[in-house]
Image 1: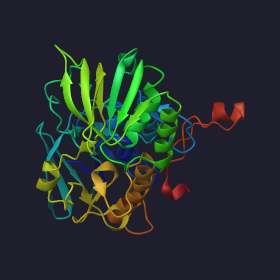
Image 2: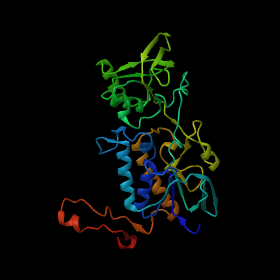
Image 3: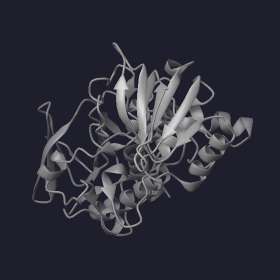
Image 4: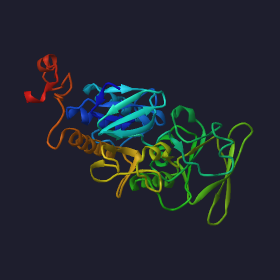
Length: 354
């Protein structure tokens, strides 16, 4: 309670990590409060082995590799980090925000950036018969280890990017992959959809539209699934050992409502100019937010992080000003010159030394 931070970032996923990094480059010393016991957010918790293709300048990486790289990058600006801290309440007195966590710890800050993602990763259920009964017994909502599906007949349900990505990734691991989607329209990027359609035409996977699950059967785990065409009612029974439901994750909005943040009808935080929320001094980035034209992509989170960090700096210090220190770059800069690389420590310097 004695220390008042410049900014506290709630959430240590990609959006939170990059916000911390940009705050650090602006001379601020951010505090990251993470509810889990590691950094990386959804990428590390749910998709550690999922291939990621849409990060600029990185041809391909896994969710875990992305999380590790982002963590290494942000640690260069030496942020404060507290794990296992779930923020329960926030209140403002005389321009200072007080955050109280479930652990009983209390923090004070001049500004807050909410980067909670979709909260506690609550999966959206499709409501098919047997969905709850077979959860954890062959039915899952995310893929943590690709090897778990080796040699299996797999059914993937969904029309978003995750469904397309896992279809392309698991086709070379599983015995067979069938993708079903309940309507003609897709939420996934058109390029990913076309790629999956091409795989279907080539006979590498089976793509059935508009199909849904009618019945799941098996003694102690998934053994076969009955699917049906929701327009013709035609049924097909398939031997299946694993069902992956890719319907997305619902924001956990209870805490956000208690904090007084304005949410839209889907439970996302409404953000306005430069990541601002309806509460002065509180900004929001990443999957927790929504605004016209928003796409839930990592690359957009990075852009929001830079904007939010600038807005925080203006809020705390005033326009055109910054924190007490500026970041001189990595301590081990890679210039290509062995002698320079060996001797360059890249120490932080005060703003006045610029």
